[in-house]
Amino acid sequence: MATTSALPSPSPSECPSGPASPSPAAGAAARPGPLLRLLGDTHALGRRLPQLVVGLALYGGSMGLMLRSGLGLDPWDVFHQGLQGSFGLSVGAWVTICGALVLLLWIPLRQLPGVGTVANVLLIGAAMDLTLRFVGTPGALPLRILLMVTAIVLNGLATGLYIGARLGPGPRDGLMTGLHRRTGGSLRLIRTGIELLVLAVGVLLGGTAGVGTVAYALAIGPLAQFFLPWFTVPTAEQAGQVGKVGKVGGAGAAGAAGAAG
Image (tube, rainbow, N blue to C red; front, side):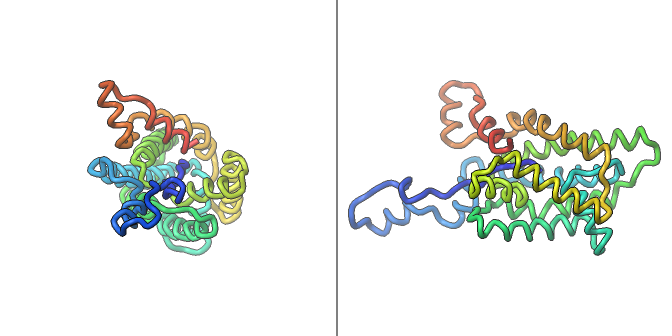
């Protein structure tokens, strides 16, 4: 899953300074409430929330199509499929269970979830299982290849949608960025290490790795990078700057793309 970074809450040094004995109203203004902490900011929520839901639903659906191609899965889904084969339940159920368990690892990392983080846990696995219920595995190899390619492209599109909504990273993405922030290690190396670990365990449990696994690894980064500028919702500040120049700039997309790298 493509990586994002959680939206941090302001530190005391970032909050506006006031008199030695601030009024209760001033203190409340200096501290964002629980809703603002969860949402990050409230600009353009009428677009961002539906975009988040569509992106996560499409992400789960693309994972279901990838599985139906029978040509290999991304590392985490190899792991989820291996858990299904070993312990039962559906693949989507394991996506949800593992997402919730990974989210618990955020606690010692002091990583703050967003509404998108919670939605990620609840929606992707359900969308994947719904897709698997209605889509079967094609018999002909060319159709399976077409299904695999379609799934990877849709996954890149979905990544652009849900990251561009700026409502918080997925649990697995946040684990990677949290470890990067706490340890100072290379984000690329941390991500690669985690994905190689879950891939190896998934294969040992009977998950399917193959040409689709390699194709996904090579294509998902460039695809997400391509779709992000189309779907990244600018912040209120960026939107104001856009209004002044009358042209959409790349600042918002560049920020999201940097978080996804």
